[in-house]
Image (tube, rainbow, N blue to C red; front, side, top):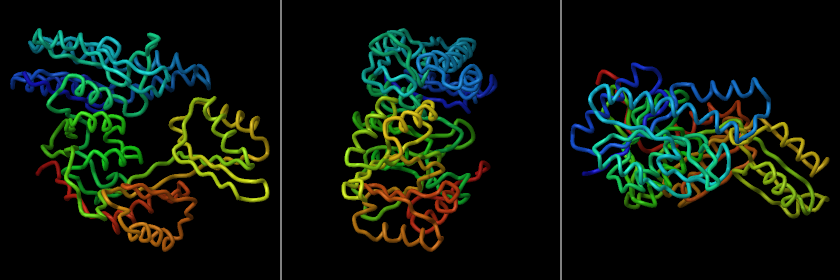
Length: 407
C-alpha cells in the first residue's frame, strides 16, 4: 500500500477543534486506501511559551535542558491527535522522535538528522495503524533528546518520507502554498504553482518560512515531491520537485530576514580568531568575508550571524571582546533582502537592477552576495520591508494571483 506523509504545523494544531479537523482529514486519507504517517508541530504558540518560561528561570538556559523542555510541545500534539483518531474508529499510535527512529548529531537546539531508522513506524503501518510522530525532535547517538531548530517538523516529515519511500510528503499550514513574497509585507504577492528543489531551498535559507531548507535537501536527494497546502479552505497548492531547466533570468520571489548581526575583526589573523570564537560558542555564520589587505592592521574579517541561531548573544559578545579585544566590531539591527530564481545571475542584469533600485530608494547597502539562484543585499533592518516591496514589484516574473477564500 502506498505511503503518504502529512505534516501539520502549529496553527493547524492550535486547539482541540482544529486537532479534530486534522483528524478528519487524516481519516479521509486512510479511508482512501493510503498508509498514513502524520508529523505534528506543537500546538499554536506552545514552543514560544515554553521558551518564555525557561527565560524566566534564567537568562541563559542550558541547551540540553531547553531540548528536554521544548520537545514536550510536540508530544502533547501527537498524543491528542492519536486520541482523536482512535475516537473516530481509526486505529492510531503516537511516537516521539526517538521512538520513530530519528537519529541526529548532538548539537542541542539546532541538531541535524543524520539517519532515520523507522522500524517501529513500519511495524505499526503493517498493522493498519496511522502513525503520529512528534516533529522537531530526535535522539543523538549519545541517547540525548535533541531539537532540530526552526522548521524542524518539516525536516522530520521529509526525512521520514525518504526513509519510508513514501510517494509524497504533504506540508499543511495556514497558507495555501509558497508565495512570491510574504503576503503580510507584499499584499499583492502571488502563489507559485511549482518550484524546483534548488529555488525552494534558496527561498527557505533566505527567510521564507513555509518550508525548511534541510527538509528540501532531503526531498531533493530522494526525489520526493513536496506539496505545500492549506489545512482549511483552499484546494490550491505549491509543488516542489525536480523541474527541467528554466529560461535564464527567472525570478520567483523576494524573501527577507531581520535580526542579523555583522561581526568584524581587524588584523592578519582575524579570520581564524573570529571563527574559533564562534565555534567555541556553537554558532555558525551565514556569510563570510576576508579582506587581507584592508587597512594598516593587515586585514579584516567579517561574518554575518543570525540572532535566531545564537544562544545567549550577550555571552558571545563577551567572548569576542576577550579574544579579539579592541579590534572587533559588532553591528546589530541589520536585515537581508534576497531575490531568488533559476539563472538569476546568468547575466549581470538582475544584479545591476537590484543595486539600482536600492540606490534610487536611498537604501544603504552594507554588502551584497550572489549564487546561481540568489542575489542578496545586506541593509539596515528598518529598510527591509520597503526594499522587499520594491524588488518584488520590479523583478519578480512568476506566480499567479491568490484566490479569495470564497473562490
